[in-house]
Image 1 (cartoon, rainbow, N blue to C red):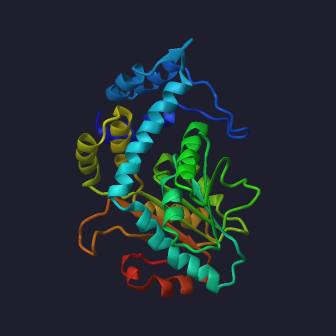
Image 2: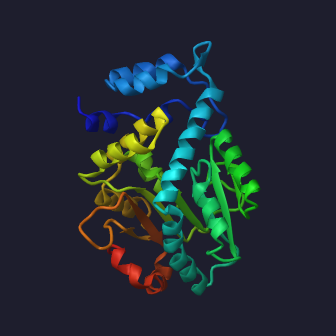
Image 3: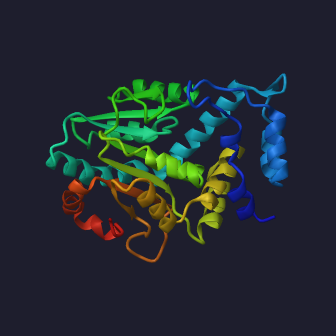
Length: 311
């Protein structure tokens, strides 16, 4: 069975070893044998080997051990994000969006909520850069308490103006003006992806920017080489390659978005490197309310060359 078949049918290890109640957000126990059976059925022997090494208590994966692995993996992901200057790229796309919203009279403060923020690299980078303006509030949300505790610890050490909360991003007391995310879209398949995008259609939400792996023929091999050289945590190596293989194609993302969230004008940004026929590792799904569309395009400047048709 090919890697592509395995990954498109099954989850990443990080998806399988944690579980949360969708209503209460409370963590649920995960039986080790259930995870192993799942990956054995998929003939994903590498995943089986990695999961077998995770400690258990009475047959249940040890939450502390799982969290340690996830935090280590996120630290390695942060290093990768720093090397690819991901924070800067997020800011460069958010700036024309925010200026368009300001021109259109969006009421302050503008709240940016990072969905599934993990240890909060993007939110912390944006807060440290100070490039978005004093009228912007930055928040990261995730279901995993351990990851958010690490995010808040780092933000406190760095004395940053941002906050993190264990929450459903779409049920916040203070709703988001702009939703952002990095590397979450490929975790959602079929109707779950559609449902995720439907949740953006709230009166208070004016735009969204979702960065994820860019699906291309080069992506799986490139991801394998990069993770083999740069990553040390086995789970990070395994899931990093799967992420690239499971990435949604640009056309599919747009089709689902325009069906699920027709209230937004949407497009794909940044599929090519330096306007050459070289695919980027990440591209982004952009959505904005039609009344801000023209101002957004005007504020894009030369970056508009990297933006696909927005409709």
